[in-house]
Image 1 (cartoon, rainbow, N blue to C red):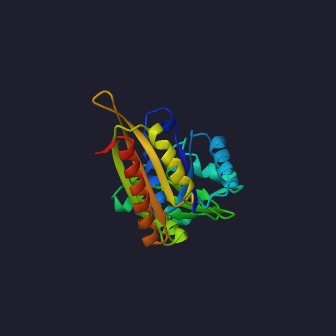
Image 2 (tube, one colour; image 1 turned 90 degrees about the horizontal axis):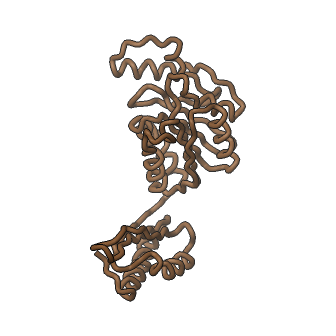
Image 3 (cartoon, rainbow, N blue to C red; image 1 turned 90 degrees about the vertical axis):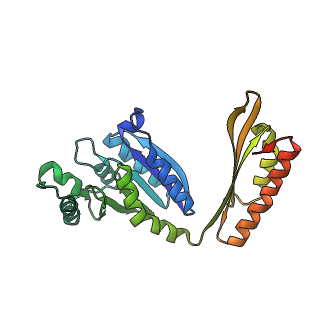
Amino acid sequence: MIAEILCIGNELLSGITLNSNAHWLAAEISGAGGIVKRVTVIRDELVEISEAVKESLARKPDILVTTGGLGATYDDLTLEAVSLALGKQVVLDSRAVMMLEKSYERRKLQYELIGAGLKMARIPENSIPIENPVGSAPGVADQADKTKIFCLPGVPTEMQAIFERHILPLVKKRVGKFVVHEINYNVRGVTEAMMAPVLIKIVKSHPRDAIYLKTHPRGYYRTNTPQIKVQLISRGNNGRNVKKRLCTIAKIIEKEVALLGGRIC
């Protein structure tokens, strides 16, 4: 299951806000067995968002998740941009209005839904609003050809709540049975370049999606001893085979570290 993530907001590109949404979503989708092929960050500009959506849909991912731009202010343009990309109109949706009313009632807020307040209930025609159990702005589900589109709020707690409740189950169902086993080694006395030849051999001898093998530099211990982290992930739909593959590769790595004069800490 191939996924793309589109994060929208000037604050993400100005350094004001850390893009924790992309990090969290990528981990959740990957952990469920999906593959995140691309993360794109776009400013709050109608045409740019629309073009980014079109470009993503042209690559035909199974799902496209957008975050941000669903609020009531003038620069919340995501749903208008998605509508533009899909050739649709933005319409006031009675279900979305009811969700907004429910959210205000839940939080005991006295707020009359008129004018700008109704902006959060204007969604692409024939799309489906998704109730926001934490905040106000509903999420939105739509579809273009075989790509499912999910537009989520930018507030992390709201985004996570909607994703976990409504989208993650769909991801897991689409992926089917999936097992992941992981080992991480903290190694001293060995550099990435020293480990590279054996890692290349391992990766080439297994199916591309069956393993993830990566070294991460960790600076130096006591000034002159290199440190790296070796991350090994084995995945698939057969638990026994996944575990066996992990153990086999782990032994190769451990042996290579010893031969290179390194030490696993």
